Image (cartoon, rainbow, N blue to C red; front, side):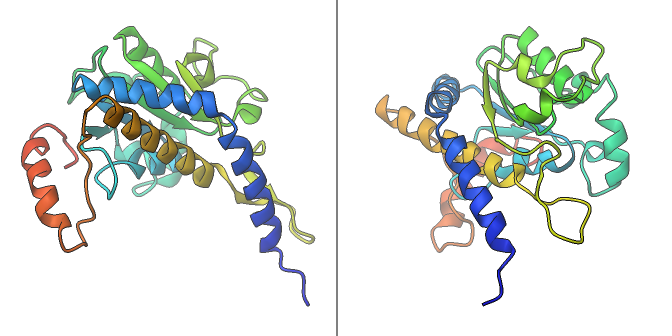
Length: 246
């Protein structure tokens, strides 16, 4: 039988996922920050640049997602208008006031920031700004990569140094994890898969914590299920005026 190269990726991803989920204490701490926030009607903000913006959308308006989520999404920091342009923009300072121009972030809120390298100016600046407001910051990053590079922010700090809770995605330096004979450049990045799993694990644990307090979290159902549309209608009536992206 011909050796299947994708099995190398499967094995590596499984190993890294196991390592990620050994961060039990950190997952619990992150979930506690979120459950504490939601229990006092705080907001969950999410942010990432480049491909990390996928995680910023991961728990927003989806089946099983909290209603009180405000993603901070600017086209120039994403990929759909200019992918190469977003690489330039994420290295610039001055975006924090723009990202929060629609909202007033407070001590009751939590900001989830996703950055594989953790070196670029925008996420570092945003984390700094949030902490100045008393907002708790949860970071999912690649510690090996981040510690191998210099900061692109004037402070010299990297994102992992600004999180109240910091989770490692255990990625390779450069993210792409698989080498194949005849190909000079590695393939098979892992940051999105593992980051998504960690994020959803945090939300599951936060939901359980809320229920243990006697609080039923407001969670969207699938809009493609028979009951989902009617369930979501009540949440949308309440939150559309409060969440720009809805």
